[in-house]
Image (cartoon, rainbow, N blue to C red; front, side, top):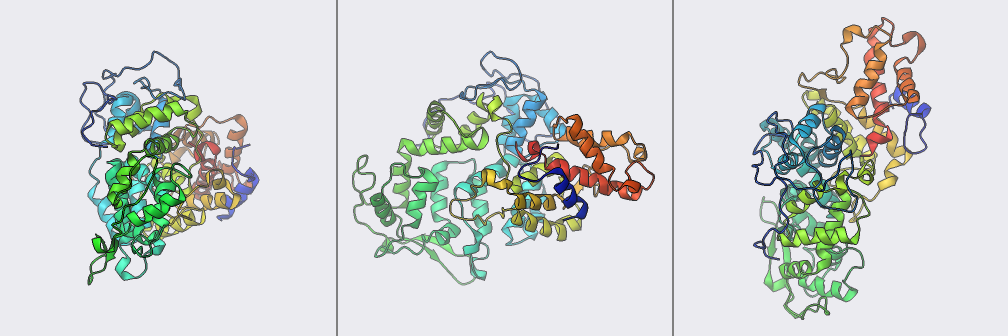
Length: 531
């Protein structure tokens, strides 16, 4: 049986398919991979400018595919196998074409990571398309998820959006209409930057000020929402270090930030000392003396606590690798983070080049969200928003289906973000994923409609019965799926549906529809939904 999640069985899915339903000058103590070799500056993961060299990377002497140690962050070998490269690109870029995988193999690990972390200018048409959706932040962000030359930056933006969850639904009226877009752009700009600066911008972000009542927190009656979530969800973790008294005192420290509304301009944050409580606050009394803390000094005090660096290290490791890092791994990553002045990029680089990422325990252990699933499929099949339909009605319906599948960007269910994990596999949500996958765009360099013809055997041979197996494996190979005989038979049966309209007969009008349904069924395989 085709491996599908939940209680859905193949017959049920087929029915749905057929019916259409500290200071920055701290020296870097951990050398960056790449040795003395110059990183490739420019281009994308697709660039043909490749080099097969170790670039002076020092790694443990080990061999074999996915032979890394799940609890080590020392550098993995530079030479990647085909499957290791695909795994890396799925974790960093949602998905990957065959050419992107081959390029990563040819470059090696160090230069591939260099490229992923080197931000490239976006194509003009991508920026123009995103801007055409004006204040619709969900559409604007989805354009970049699908088309950006910097997929790792978008993936990191999704990581921070889930951790620093904020919702567009609190922006009401025309005066606040642009705040969700500003919030996304703020997250995206800081995703691989300095964490301390990020926390300052987050605290002053207008949408966050509305979401957690930070702009409605007078010193006479301070609101505790932001102080609580700042420690519980953003920087330390639940019940780590802080107490209820710390929250009360922290709320006083965060007073004084207001949103200023002026004529037709967007509301902007202002720190008004008149509205700030200037009394001495006692925060973390076993570790710090009372002081007149404000929002910046609270951030600095928090970052001075070792638990803060550990929190980020643990979360990022779990995001990219697996969810059970040892305390030793967390401590080592936290050291990298602090030693590099709370810069996020060196921490991410250490994780992405680590043995742990290329261990057997890191394979297929993450369940993709609906948006991640669709974007991964699109990037693997080289799908693009080229036509008016794929930029208009189809795009609108796609985002509706992804919302019905449980995920609307900039509209998380709560301040805790999305925490579904295995709950993403609820039957109804899976069915909505299938519906979303029906809204395709244009494929390959030729921007063909309906099907990824650039991957499939020539249509001139589709009247041959044996071509069905070629079609099945063309798509299976794109997603690196090894099919059992039973799975192969099921997919061929989908192509042969409806008896007298069987795929191998000469009535070619039905062939694309059968192939579309076979592809949608394959995209619900557990190995495609997971990564």
